[in-house]
Image (cartoon, rainbow, N blue to C red):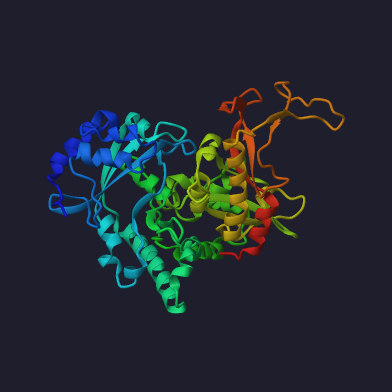
Length: 484
């Protein structure tokens, strides 16, 4: 093994500061991009440029951290960012989770966290950020135009280390349980990601067996790290919560404390008077319940890392009643170019979302402010929802786009006449993407008005498309879910 390159911290900082604002092509003094002349796709081309051209060392295939800074081993990770589209409180969001190192079933069960290969890799990180400025996937050669936008010599806080340790131990212990229960445990390693998805706070594993999985830091956690390094401030909760078990215990405690209070009473308790018409009132109440001063989940450190989505629903005699719910915008062009569901943006986004439903009991004919808080339901979508329903939607969209079968037609009334939009008086149109009549997860377009169609694809102009989940399916999932 070649000796690792050593840096003085001040020299490394100057090198990185000078790189900010320059493109990867401008930094490529070792002509790394020459390889793209014969290969359209090169995994890790941005990292190769940073390693070889910026920092001056060859790609390091060993299990050791890449460089030594002031005598400390440091692992280098180069990662792509996109401008945040949905969260106005963030400048950037991570393009994908941060892959750390392989999950090795043969050795992990003999490790402790502090002696693990994983911890050796993440104890000291150098994160170098470039902006992925394209809205769609590009060949490796196009990476030369992506600018470096920042870096972070990162160390996790003590509280974050407790979470990483707990997640890592859950993964190790699951592998150990498979070894103890089966003669051929490798035949059951495919359960690793699905069995722990609802329990892991910061980590996940991907891809699935029989492909060798790797530890990854979730995209929402990485986005939080990125924006902190760029000056974003988050509020810390008064109570330390480092595991999903503790999170659910806190939900139960808050239910005992506030259960039975009306929305009006909760508004008074948390000084939200005058907010009764706010669309985010339920979110504000929940955030204040946890002891935060803010009223938005995105401003709270833990909630940002959890990718927490707060919803409220009214409990009737028939149970929880949830309307069709908008999830997040999707990029049709990117879906058409993706090669597998497990590596898709939709899968990545959905697998990290934590839905927190605040349940309020209502009486027919009463004011919403008189609804009574019953409790929380922390919803993680089932494996069946992922592997059957979400996959079916992704596959349908992928095939329509990649096979250039996208069509737009004018919507007609029952008598065959054309329907018109009420404001702009233009013909109402529809596209042949998944709809709620046939799919649990479906797409629906939205825009400022009927003339606002900014999405250009296959020669058509479309509204921005969002992924939705069917309300009756979500209601059933909630009714089957116990209170936290």
